[in-house]
Image 1 (cartoon, helix red, strand yellow):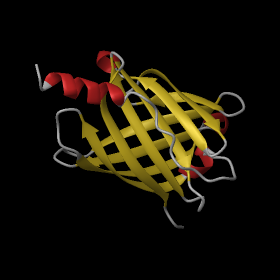
Image 2: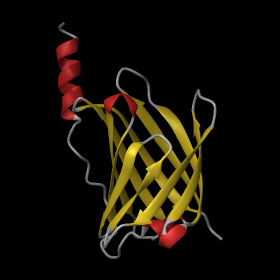
Image 3: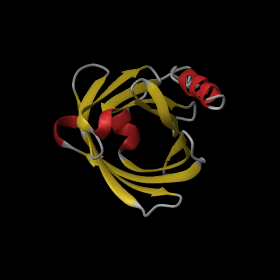
Image 4: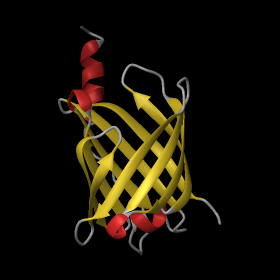
Length: 166
C-alpha cells in the first residue's frame, strides 16, 4: 500500500494537458502538412512499463471534398510493424472530423493558430487527447498524445514529426 499511494498520486498528477511550444505566427493546416510524406520519431510511455521508441512513416493524399487520407506505418520497439489509416474532412472553420483505424466513433480535430487538438475514443473505455504544435520552420510538428482510462493517464507519447523534403 505504501508504494501504491505515491504511484497513484504521480499518475493522477499527469492528467493535466500539456501546452507544447509552437510557432508564434501562422496557422497549422493539417491537410496541407500531412499531404505527401512525413516521418515521426517518438517515445511511448505506459504506466508500470519502460518507455520505448516509436517511428511513424506517413503518406497522405487528397481525399474527398478537401479532406485527407493518411496511411501510416508504425514501428514500435518490441512489436511487429503495423499500418493504420486516418481520414480527415473539413467540418467548418478550424474544425475537422474523420476516422482512425483504432478509434471507436468519430475523430475530432480543432485548430487554433499553430496548434491542433485531437480527441477520440478507443476500445475498453480508453480516451485519447492529442496536441499538435507547428514549429517556426513550418516543416516540423511536435505531438503529445495522452491515453486516459477512467480519468487516469495510463499512457503517453511525445513525438517530433517532420515533413519529408521533396
